Every structure is written in structure tokens, then in C-alpha cells.
Image (tube, rainbow, N blue to C red; front, side, top):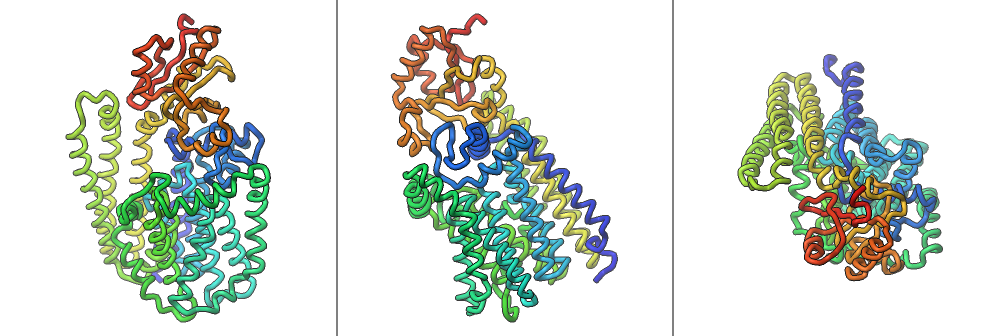
Length: 563
């Protein structure tokens, strides 16, 4: 081992870790919550805390049974401890992202070597999709963090030199990870790891692995974590089991009922983008898993099957969203790290060159996009121009970082180690700069700039507040309110079938209520879809515009017109 390697310097490693964590935690609160997911899960956590009901999940005061409660529990606890805010809403996902980085570092160290553990942490922590989604309040990172526990627990438990105590404890971590993944996003929390295990044993004929799963203790732990809530919510809401298990799992996977379909190759570009800046090592890392011939348990083959099966599973699903493949990245990080440790500096050079190509591709794309912008567009064009300096910084850092990586990788083993660190650092910064510069777009999507104007009209917590033809996912959280849906049930269709009194299905009934507020001298506010606003303008509907943009129109009645 080269004694001058940065991996042998505690000072270097501590400096890298502290810098990484400072940026990571700063970025949790640096941006507005962006619809839809971020606003939805922040609002659900806020409502859970406000209502004190930790069993029946609700969105906008309406029963919402699409997912289990773990993230809402964690968000509600965070709000209880630290108050409402952007970083508080992202804290759980941020901690899950860090958990994944720590888990691959520990696992790489245990089953391969200390150097592989360090490199795996560098790879995962800097991968665009992992570092990015660690700063998004969605269920995907919560699921991925818990599934990483399951994967890493299984790998450590099955390593050749594991004693009985290590095997048992690591398998209990695996079972707990599957249970918490189930409580994060449903049955895939154990179905997917189970599928990986079956495929692995068929591929390797390692039937003895099943004897080392500690299935008795594991199942007890699994059901101790998962069963209480599923029982309690079924008792309180008999309609929950059918909707959750049949509609949200079987029908979601086998059909396009959620209208989130996509072609079979939907996730391929997302995988390529998501693994930036490690594109140049991805295929080699995967191939090292295919050809793993380790006697006994074959960890690289397990990692390859994990990544390949999960990617295939979501690719054939009738419901596709970009975050679905996030759980494969810890496996990819371990495969890439293991390959980088076994080979010379050529893959690192290739990764550096492709990072330069990535920067050039963004530059070309930016030029084309700006050239197509409508000069008369009063919203998108200024936002795009404001984002441009940030994208130029991304382009510059990609090219400079890639070039520095290539140059360092030419300087022997120590240079290779520094090149890996350089690529990780520049890749991490590229992603975070890109996210930070997007914040004006996020504010526009969330409508957060209109919060003071809306609060000025919502003169009391009981002031009627309507959402006509659209539902805003972020504004209710910032306003600490719910809204009355009109004409558009959005994703709350099932809950409104159970509680039809909580909304107004017909526009004409809303118009009557609005006029009644006006006649009684009661202030009222509404967020209206633009085409509906244009229809209302053609009538004598009593309203004044508070704010207007291409996404929404916010109106109030005339009660406070002269205030």
C-alpha cells in the first residue's frame, strides 16, 4: 500500500467528510419545497402533527392511503422538535442519504477492504441522483436508505469470515431494513430483496444461504415493526386494505391506472445521468459483478443482481417515476469502488474524459435551449436567464474537474487516489450548484412568492380558502392550512369517495358559496386554474386578482377590497 495515499491520511479524510457534511446540511434548507412530492409530504407531516392522529394518513384533511406512514411520522417528529420549515421537511430524506453513504463505506470495508469502503462512500456521496434526491422530500430516498440497510446487512452477514454473532446481528439489520422499507413505501420493501435472494441462489446454487438468514428471529422482528400500524389502520379504516394492497400495488404495477407509464428504456437515460460523474466506470463495475467467481458467497454477484433486478422490475412496471431506481445506486457504488481498487488508472481517466464530455453536452444543450426561448415570454425566459450563470458554473466545473481528474490519474497510484477524490468532489459540487441555481424555478412552481399576499387575505384560520380546478401541493404547507377542493379531486379521489362532504364537485355550487360569502360580508380566497378564471371573468363573479402567472390565478372576493 502506498503510504502517501490520501486514504491513509486521517486529516485528509476528516477534511473531506466535514466539507461534504457542511454542504449536505446547508443544502437541505437552501431551496423552496418544490411540488409535487415535497409539498405533499411536508403537508401530510404537518397535518399529522396538528391533528394528533398518527394512524390515519391525510392530505388536505382527506384520507390518503397511497403509502405507509414512516416518512410522515419522521416529518411530524421533526416539525415537533424543530418547527416548520424547508430543512426540517427534508431532514429525514437527508439523513437517509447519509445513512446510505455510511452503510456502503462500512460494508465495503468489511467485505472488501478499507480502501474500497472509502471509495464506495466517495462514489455514492457524489453520484448526481443520490446526492440530489437526498435533498428532495420524497419517499424514494426514505425507501432507498432502508433498502440499503437490508442490502448491506445481508452482505455483511454472509461474508466468509462472519462469526455467528456477526451473522445474526447483520441479518437482523437486514430484516429491520426490509421492515422499515415496507413502512416507507409498501410491499416492495421486502418483495424486491426477496426477489434478489431467489435469483442469486438460482444463479449460484448457494442453497445454504437460506440457512443463514435467521428467518425465525427475522420474521418476528419484521412483523413487530410492520404489523401494528397495518392492523390499527385497518380497524379504524376498513376500506384501507383493499385500496392499499390491491389498487396501490397490484394495479399500479400491472397497469397504467396512475397514468405514469413510460417506454421500456425509460430509466436508461436516468441511470446514465444519475451515476454522473462515474459514467466511465459504470459498465466495468457491473461486469465485475457478472464475472464474480469468489468461492462461497459472491458479494459482487449479489450486488449485480440487486442492481439489475431492481432496474428490470421498475422498467416493466406500468407506473414509472424518475426516483424509482434510486435503491440501485448503493449497489453500483460498491461495484464501481471494488473495480476501481482492482484495476489501474485507465478507468479513472475515462471517467474524467466523460465528465468533460458531460460538461460540453450541457453547454450545447444550454445554447440550443436559450436560442429557442420566446423573447416575449415574461415568466420562463427571465427564469432561464437567471439560471444560466449557475449552469455555466456547472459546465466549467465539469470540464475543469474532468481535466484535473485525467491529469492526476496519470501520476501513479497516489495520483489515481487523488483523481478519484477530485472526480467525486467536482461531481458533488456540480450537482449541488445545479440544484441551488434551480431555486427561482422552484419558487415559481410552488407559488411561494405569493404567500405574503395570500396571508394578508386569510384574515383568520377559518377564512374560506378554495382550490378551483387545481391543487397546490406546496402552498398549503407554507400557509399552515388546508383548502376546499372544487371540481378537481386530483390524487385525493379515493379519500373524497369516503368523505364527499369535504369538497365541492361542481363549479356552479362553488359559485353559489362564493356569492354567499360576498353577500354575508365574509372574506374568501381561491386559487383558480387559468382557463376557469377566464370563464369567471365573463360573468359578474365578484373577485379581484391577488396574483397571476401561467400556472395559477389567486383571487379574493370584494369584502376586503378597500382595506
